[in-house]
Each structure stands twice: as C-alpha cells, then as structure tokens.
Amino acid sequence: MHIQSRFILTIATLVFALARTMHIQSRFILTIATLAFALASGLPNEVSADELKEAKVTQVIQDVRVLPSNASPRPAAVNDNVHQGTAVQTGGQSRSELTFKDQTITRLGEKTIFSVGEGPRTFDLGSGQFLLYAPKKAGGAKVKAGPVTAAITG
Image: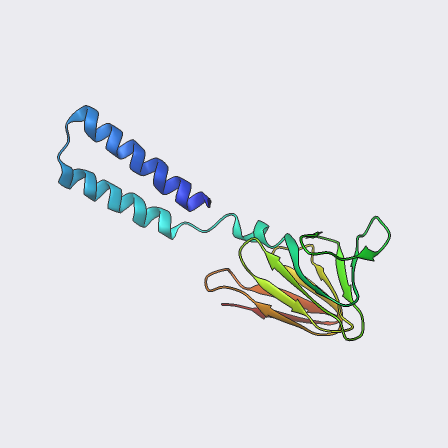
C-alpha cells in the first residue's frame, strides 16, 4: 500500500472517530474527508524513487546472465531480484524482461548489458538495446548509455 493510500485511510478513520465522539453533522464530516483526500492526492509519491531500485526478472529466453557486482556471473532465472549495481546480460538470440515494483517494464534485446543505476530512477545501458515502459504518473526515468543520457517522462 502506498504512503498516500495509508495517509488517506488514517485521516478518514480519525475524522469518522472524531465525528462519532463529538456528534458532528455528516456534512462537516464529508467536507473534512474531501479536504483530506485532496491534500493527500497532491502529495508527491515518496515511494516512487525507491520502486526503481530493484526489479524482478519476469522473462528469460535463451542465454541470460545476472552479473552481481560482488559475485560471479550466473544464469538468470524468473523471479531473480536485480538490485542497484547488478547488471543483466543477454547473449545472441536471447532476451529478457525486468519488472519493477511500480510496474515499469524493461525488455532487453540480444547482446545487451543493462543495470539499475545508482541515482533515483536511473538505468545504465552498457551495450545493446532495450524497450522501457513506464506507467503514466510513474515519474519517468533517466537512461545513461555511454556518454549519452536521456530522460523519459510519462
């Protein structure tokens, strides 16, 4: 559950509890609840930057390897976690798919080296090609490919 949803639920619970104990009219309750919802909707989603720090491997076709920064390369498997600093490498006629917590999807083509970058919502493309799908209002992403950096917004 996102922070915004928890905030709205907490405020609504407090308003209704207060209204019951103080015998406040329902029109006032609705006004306060609407105001709390509007305020919570305008808050930035604090979780969104963290959601792109880790992905799950959701598809592996042919030769796909996970390259942890502190361990030996190993074959990738569905449901493997890919953290910051860990790369995924695809071989010839191979491809893979990574899905992040915010449902951002990255599809890696053949002969690609891809990693989750150190910055918020940043990806590093060592070589190859990939397709990035970021849901609307997810906050976009920044892609570094050698000397070139591109920003993507939804």
